[in-house]
Every structure is written in structure tokens, then in C-alpha cells.
Length: 167
Ligand SMILES: [Zn+2]
Ligand SMILES: [Zn+2]
Image (tube, rainbow, N blue to C red; front, side):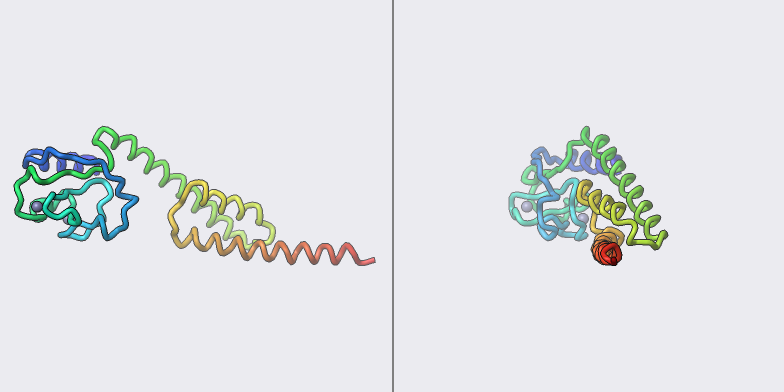
């Protein structure tokens, strides 16, 4: 991925695009950062032209954006090339910690004794929040299950009180 991005930026520069602008793509709605040609959602970089500020393309399709000369175009970038290694490391770390989380969750489901695992479920759900994991099916199921487990725990507590109140 890093090599492709480097090559694409190089060819853009060789074509004559000098301007660039830092853009936090992740803050834009998807339809405002879609390549006009291939409809890819841009998150690392994109090319825009002064003739139409609403249009952009990915780095592969910049020549189809419009007919203007290259110096009207500008590169919009999220990361500088020298920031890439650090960013990749972060992405990898995140992927790893999500894999660990998923395994813990699946193990817990295997146990099939949800009413005794309130603490474990709570800590898994806390982890989702703290690490801002993506809303995958596992993540959603886990939240649902915590609600179930909390209900069970409540009933269990009530039962326990009942039992201990029996003279
Ligand atoms: Zn494209
Ligand atoms: Zn143009």
C-alpha cells in the first residue's frame, strides 16, 4: 500500500501538480470524498481542481477529473509520505488488538454460562468503547449480550435475596 501511494503521488507530481492541502478525510461524509470515476471512498489522498471544488478523484483517476491544466489541480492528503510507516504501525496495532478482543469474545460465548460472566462481558464492552472498535457483527452481538447478561444477573440477585429471606 505504501509503495502504491508513493508511486501515485510521484506520477501526480511529474504531471505537474504542485499544490497540496491537508485534509482530514475521515471527517468528511462519504459522498464528499468519493472518486468521481471509480467511486472509491478516498481516505489517504485525492485530487481536486479549482474548476469544480465539489469534485475529486482518487490518485489513479486524476486525469479524468477535467480538462484543466495540471497547475489548476491540487493534491489533498491525509498523511505525508514520511508519516506512513507510523500510521501503518498504528493500523496494525489496532487490527491486532481487535483480533485479541474478538477471540476473547468468542471464547466467552463458548462457555455458555452467561449469568456468571457479567464482569467479563462488561470488560469486553468497556474495551469496545475505549479502543473505538468498528461496529462489526461481533461487537454488536456483544453489546446485546451484555444487556441480556445484566438482566440475568438482576434476576439472579433477586432470587438470591428471596432465598436468603426464607426463614
Ligand atoms: Zn478512482
Ligand atoms: Zn478543472
